[in-house]
Image (cartoon, rainbow, N blue to C red; front, side, top):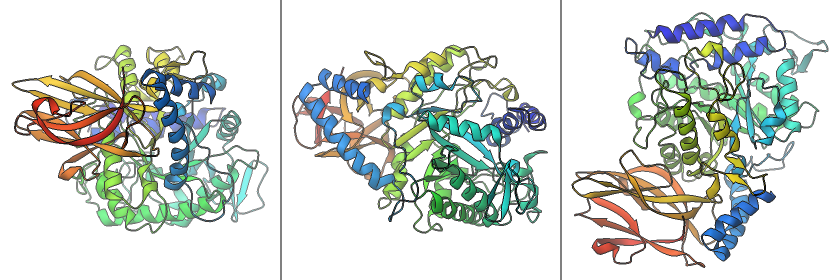
Length: 604
């Protein structure tokens, strides 16, 4: 057992018992939910190991035109116009609500310049976050705080009546949701925390420690769905309380710590029953939410244990791989349009290091893997191709990390997210360090509110409102993704082509622009990993199956016909197919020509 993690959670629990002053109750619930959310699983898995291991629109249009001018003015403008129209259509088709008349408001779409969000930690200056182009915030909506006991109407003035029940309004959250909605910020609600009365039948539930009982699964999905439906009605954007547009159903559901069906900590779990129990909760909540907001997005939440080796139903800290969970969940959920909320923390929570080679985990470094797998696995369900990153952070605490390392990694994480079509939201966790997190200091600001080096990186990366715009960390390339060919010099040259950062040891050779959103006469390219005797390399293809190799994710849309200022890109091999590379040379630099990929725009 990693005692550092347990002490961190004990501190969180002590905060949650402090009462209900202006932020006491909410801060306590946030600490309980957040302090080691992913670290709990990793810490348990690595029990006995070192704690350092796995603990755990005008300016925007102008900017896009400027980018287009850099790479060819006419092409940039045409592409931007086409992308805007097509992307709008695709967004509606791929990720929209259910067919039929809209119930409530249309979904509050964000452009990519506003992909950035944050968990605000009760930050006093909300206008400051809006000024820095925050597109979304996340809030914890804890069922146990709203309905600690079952009460029938009549309800008091501080309660919300819904479906024959009285819910005690969380006043701090209520005001926060209204205020941010009024400021034009999209609100994502994390709906979790089962009250004691709703889980009396889950007698086998074995919480990770005292106070984690609220993560025992509820006895009756209808009770949980009633809470979710109440939230969807109250926060529909039409009642003067603001709007919650994205609903995350429970938290990190592929871990027993955060979704406990009555097993774990020495008792083997029934993997099928686990997924079935969650699917029943999700289906009931989905239907209740859609009754009031047909366009709301309803998401299932995962931490970063992605591949099949993490199917560990008998481990002390039990988990199910993301791939297994989603596949079996989809088979049980009917035609409901589910989407993924993902937490791409680094492999080791205490450091800021992540890489394109992070499998079997999926992190900031190889986030495209998840997007590629979703497209390949659910080719006829385009709504599944959209992913929101609803929680993740980077440690600045010493000795494993530093504030400088956090700032550098912050920019790198943004570059990889912007280089991955299909990611629509990146909510950073959290605004400032929380005492309950101990030495795991992931805030953009210190606990006293003073700014770390990561704050200006995050805050100033997407300032499309300035004249001229100030854009960095990938935002400067919008509406494009930056495709880079990189090379590693060993006994032969080996190449890596991606819109995300390459593994260590690779140096940039040349850049091109692809579109981040679809447009007329374009096709989506995928990055595919291949291990050869010469080393790690990638090739590009239209084939979502990556010709049998590992799909590292979508890169962007390449033109199928030549446009102004565009150049052809060829897929090539060399050294008996031990090296894969891309080039503008139709002779593949004396290598073997595999084929023409399409036409891209030159980029700096």
